[in-house]
Amino acid sequence: MTPSNIIIWVEGCVRMRALLRILPLCLFVMVLLSGCDWERDSFVYQGILFEGFDPAKHQPSAEFLKHVTPTKVSLSRRQIQALKKCVDLLNEQKLRHLLVYPDRFVIVEAPYSFADKPQMIVYLDREKVNLTFTIGDDWENKLLNANLGLMEHSGQFYFKGTPELPNLLRIIIHEVGHLVEYDRLKFNWQGKFVPHPLNKEFVSISWDRDHYWQDKEGFSEKLHNIQSVEDLLAFLQWFKDESSFFSLSSSMGMNEDFAEAFVYYILQEYYGYEISFVYNGRVVLDNLQALNPYRTQKKAFIANLLQNESMDE
Image (cartoon, rainbow, N blue to C red; front, side, top):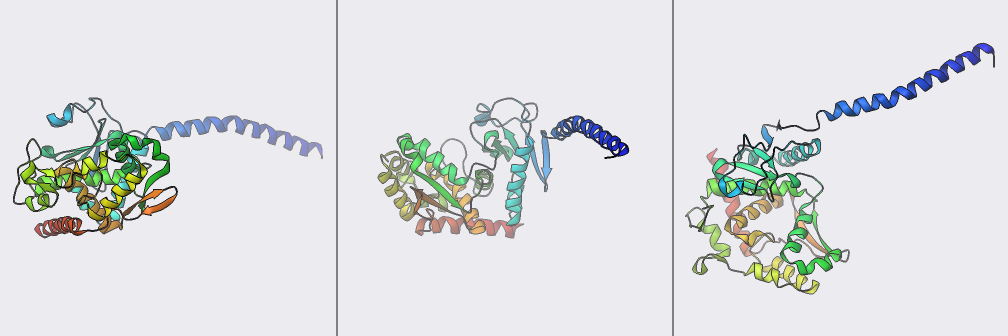
């Protein structure tokens, strides 16, 4: 190596050391600057407004306000991406019009999401705004919450959705369903249920007027009486074959019944969605929401409701 080559080599080494010193600083600055936009108070996506809860701006109705943490919520980049993904999933099936029902979506710290019907605003529980928790996960969670005795067996089974969809999508459709029932069917949303000609046909499928509007199936009692995996399999077989409900939470009330039927009408008709029960790594019950005479009536009711709405527009 000639002296001139040695000089060039040394200079190259010096430049390389200088570059290696500067590179971490550049990366730090890039991360810092990119993080400046990680949290936002609100955003509009495809014409739909999403806002973080602000106590100075948002005042939910009294029945919900007591459950809301009165702190300002900022939206992280991951939460924004999750919300946008759900809008995309609806838009792909030409269902974005459902998102026009609410005046806006507000992300809030609360134990559950809710539709504030008088204000026509959907409030989404901040903890649920993610894409990692699936509809199948939600089924398992609701089952274990309803029957804690099954917790010791929880490693043996799970619910599998086909296709897998985020539970956030189900929540959004569910809460929109509550606004549809309020706006289109005149469901009484406080206190005692009052039948209305617009909702009586739907309600009469599952609910017994002569016994204070109790569900005709004794669904909750059946769910709570499960004491073993064998009992669970028998319950789910009955649910598939005979129940008029579409989910484990449908029997909580007539409003929940409609909102869940609305959800699974949309998911089945537009996404071909099915949910199956997997035990010890094997599907032992597929398509738990297979149509039977009762579910067929509910789906026909919702299909007719949405068709009439499109004609009104």
